[in-house]
Amino acid sequence: MVKTKICQTCGEIKSLDEFYHDGKDRRGRDRRNIHCKSCTKAAYMTSVCPDCGTAIVKTSKRCHGCATKEAWARGAYDGEETRYRRSEKAKAAHARGDFKGMWTKRLRRKQSDDAKARWAQGAYENNWTPELRRKQSEAQKARWANGGFDGIFQSPSKPELIMARSLTNAGLEYKAQYRLGNDGRPFDFYVPILNLLIECDGEYWHSLPGRAESDAAKTALARKQGYMLIRITAQQILEMSTRG
Image 1 (tube, rainbow, N blue to C red):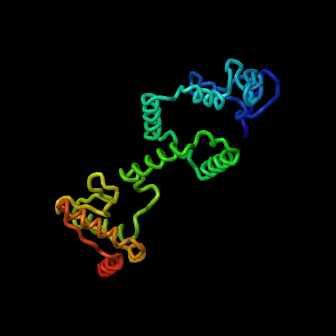
Image 2: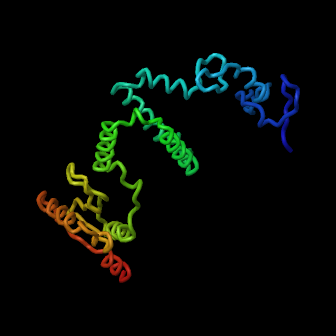
Image 3: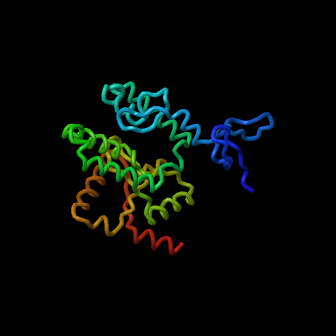
């Protein structure tokens, strides 16, 4: 049975879902507002945003979106300290799981469509300068080099999973996607107790043009810094796993 309540403003009988929560009573039961949501909005949303025309609370001057745009325009978010504080606040929210379940495929698609529409309307024409694009590109490259995207856009391949399981079964601690110093090129595995780097080479990717030179440069870098390096093809790893 659907629980109902009478709105003290409009007098209509509505389900409890049509009333806002108003805390709990002394017995710990949910308490509902005496006015339905429609009447509550009508009572409080009596002002209109002068910029976009959205209904807002009568104590506000602008809606949240327009107020944020105005704050950006006057430079309220400029400065390293402000950006750092906002960044730390967002990281803490992510760590608490505040955004868990919010960043869905539907939301990502909507945000992508909105961004494309703004681009088409020229919203970024004056802001997205060549200098800003260069800085954004350099920041993304630095994040890639520091491992900021590890595990986000690329999942371990089947040979890498087999190698990780083999190292674990052998009782060897390892680090995946290991980088040497500030060099941005990761090695698949590093076994500290053996000072050993392991590369799992897939036949297709390592046969592409220019890949041989890149592999040779990584090998030279490892040897220059005193590491041992072994390269195992994906086919060899799969054969070893089938043999047990």
